[in-house]
Image 1 (cartoon, rainbow, N blue to C red):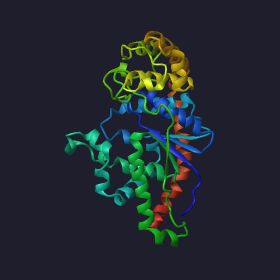
Image 2 (cartoon, rainbow, N blue to C red):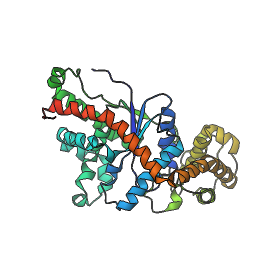
Image 3 (cartoon, rainbow, N blue to C red):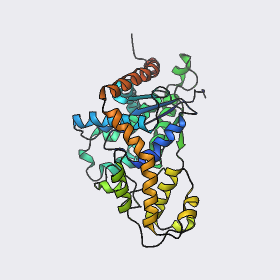
Length: 345
């Protein structure tokens, strides 16, 4: 198989406030990966419209997510940072992949089943086909690595299947054009480290989510210090003291979640946190957790507010990133058209 220059791609939808789960589960790792990889980070606004969006709210959300990326430590000079809809090659390649992927593959996507629920006949075609667009997001840059959580592993497997099928279907043509023995890489997952699954503050068995109707279920990156402290104080716990060892967290979802958050925010292990707080009541632990959370998140919130006060600067950053992204995507898409036999100028 051909060899590809290592390149990381990832993105988030601009739908609702980003929260602590997005920060600890993805952004922290994205920032670290800038030190070791060439990275492309995208605000995937085309994915957001698989369900109806208010246009004004969507534009605002795109800028907010961009501000959150930068405030968390994504450097738009070091990495490529842009919004998906400004690079039309994503949509072009997605259509090609719609013709490569198979209905059976899409039908097995568990996230579609969960999001569509019992009303499958009335959801948009985009919601059904969006894993094909996700594959295009990655492969239009021929990205070799994608940091993913457990809930996205199946979509990355589909991306790999699409790449393999395209390479096989057009193998002779790819070789004829001198493009190697495989045009697209079989992208590898980068499984996130600890605290990738930050759970709801109201129910430790459910993932923290921006779609949860209770704002007290999550800590938003836009929350001020008082709000963060109040949400942590009100977080659900159980009546038992904190255990002194990790084994004691088994079967105690809320306790496990709060200890995991403390460990991730303070860059410590759960065992280390329990060695300090084990045997104590949750009230004291929550106070310490609130202090850690505020110390870590307040600078991010402040930087987001500074950036959002100048939307023209955010738009400039996105436009610059889009131009850099298009410089990579356009030649890839041109080669895809040659492989398919399209006539182009």
